[in-house]
Amino acid sequence: MQQRKSLGSAAGALVLALAPHLRIALRGFAALEHERFRSSVTGEAFNRLNIGWLTLDGQGRIVEVSENIGQMFQWGTLLRRGRYDRLVPSEPAIDRQLTGYLKQVAAGRTVRPLAINLSRDPWLDMLVAPLQGDTISGHRSARVIVYVSGDRRSQADRCEQLVDLFGLLPSEARLAWLLAQATSISDSAATLGITVETARNYSKKIYAKTGASGHAELVRIVMTSVLALS
Image (cartoon, rainbow, N blue to C red; front, side, top):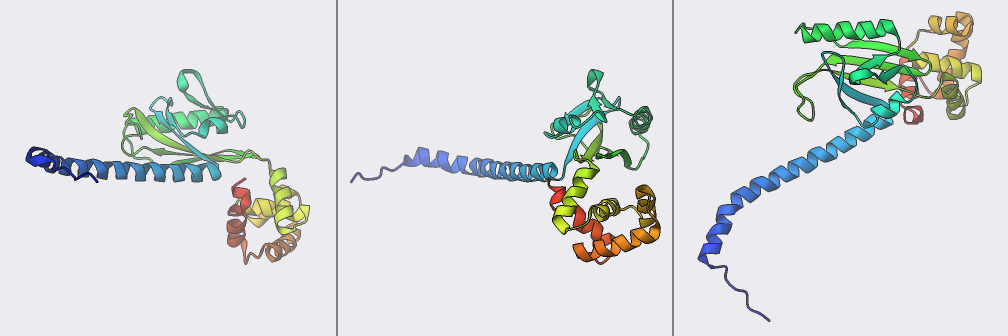
């Protein structure tokens, strides 16, 4: 068996001198791996919840995007990447609303987040908020962050899933889906072309079959079921 050789005083001194720097480097590496893991988990959660994000500069040009935003653009023509990488909503009124919001942010005004519904069927919402600090990659040109949340499936698809999940009748499933969008029972009845009394009778059966104790819990049960992940 070979005997271990001493490093010598010079090598030992070098190791001792490097030790604090190695400790700092290892701590930095561990922190980076932790952030990478957390980012991966967050990205997976955003994908499962059908949420994407992108940042825009003062002219509405796209600076950064999440990995899934391109796929969400392909769901339809409600949002698209236009000339000069500008985010373009299909509705001119929404485009003007977004442009006006960007101008206020660029002018340094204090504005609250702006929520915009792009479509009800299929469902697609957009939340625009001023960006606090630099973007992930350090771009300083970005002014706002836009969260896009949607569902490529139609209302009819979701109603069929509710029938399968909870044993609802098709008429009950249509009402349950509307109620799950936090729509009032009177508005839901008007949308379906039924009386409020009929809607109330349906809702009692819906609550019994889903186990919900009321409207608020029905929203939670439906929106946290596998429908939210498919």
